[in-house]
Length: 66
Image (tube, rainbow, N blue to C red):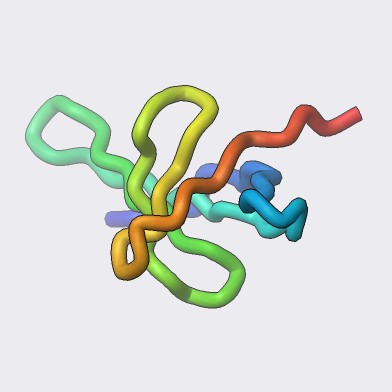
């Protein structure tokens, strides 16, 4: 079963901000995450601070929330 894990504030090169929503489920003994933008577009996590929109390849960078 998949559950909502939280959201991450990110921005693109132009400074537009979006939320990446994270969903998790367990596969055997390892957690598997799925990331989706507010717009519904699939996103993959490149590293701890960077995400990439799967369809376009556009990079999004994590923003520190105050």
